[in-house]
Amino acid sequence: MLNRGDVLVERIYFGGALCQVVPARVLRHDADELVVWVAGGTPVLRRRGRSGRALRDVPRAEWPSELTPAEWTGSGVVRRYLPGVDHSVWWFFADAGPSGPDSFEGWYVNLERHRLWSDGTGAGIDVVDQELDGWVTPDHAWHWKDEESFAAKIGDPGFFDAAEAALVRAEGERVRPVAERAEFPFDGTWCDFRPDPSWPLPPRPGTATAGRPPALRVGAEGAPADDAGERQDGVPVPD
Image (cartoon, rainbow, N blue to C red; front, top):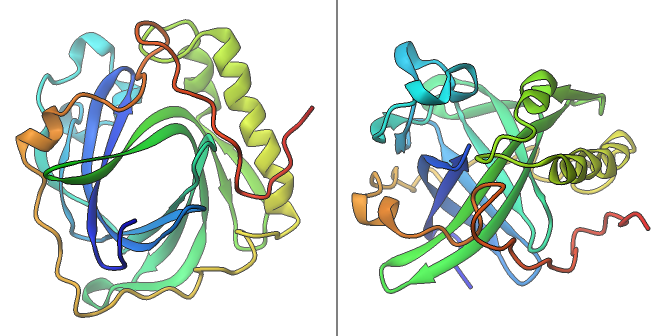
């Protein structure tokens, strides 16, 4: 188990490619959950299209081949991961400038697959972003994000086939009523979070961390699917 204040590395895959490497500060880690904080200004590695365009808006043939140094913009974000659960929940805050996060702005439900890893050099979590997401306002209204882009990627071997896409959508529909009913974790938990002012920004991850083989399947084809895990978030699983 990691301790509060430890640093782990989030490696985020999109379209079969490693697109972000982000150091995060551990807030809580036990058998049930991992909660981390990514501070505004954190040094990261990122793959971006020309003029900073998001990769979803750039043809794959035009994707850059290299990760480049960048910084995490905004006031920072809390992220909560659960073992065996195909999403994470993010808490966003208004930006108060150098003083850090200000008022809570809403929850982001990132539909994904993820897996923790550790080796002799450190620990991390690998995330396969599945494009479709949900945004939950402070008054618990749900809004789908990137539906058109998600539909356009069905059948792309870097993303998912139709069967997996249906599971991605179903995961969002499973979480949606929990958010709308303001049940945990959408009940105010972490909404007043402020980071420890003594925490410095973590260093930018190196090429060795970025080059480590992924801990789970990153596309629709290739390696076998990762093992299904038991849900531990308290959200009911449909029959």
